[in-house]
Length: 231
Image (cartoon, rainbow, N blue to C red):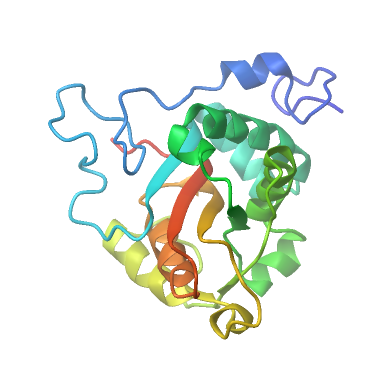
């Protein structure tokens, strides 16, 4: 296999040197949403990115911050059929898992990827969040389940929307699958929601709310490959 960034031979889609060179999320961070914050913050569980927004998940963490290189990787993963990048990103996400006590302590948990629309799945050939979730699930020895569904909406892309518009659209887009809400299928009490990018948290909040509508689900944590650092 060839490293997507430096084009040297490697075992994963990224070589160890390029994986190490990707910028991690700088500390200190908001202990709730995982956003980098100024060192003089007075409340470690609040920041400008999450204050006055719904708190349907328990915490969010990301492996690396947005940069030219990281966004190149996500663009390739989502739009250039470069699913081979996912295991390397999942390795970085596993590092965050092991470094975060609140995640590490989740023993009776399931990994759940954020779903995509049937239209995107047909066009892309795979769900990028699921491609991240599967190797992470194997690494952590946790089941990977798919209890969420994604409705087709008028605006499937959130890229150019404001935070309020993103949240409004996301709340209408994600729901729990009937087999889970009816009790035919069950989930453990702790869920780790997996996605490729965390921007405003709208998708994470909507998915967490949908997951908590399933009987027995108590806690939803969020883990993404990239955290978009908003200026």
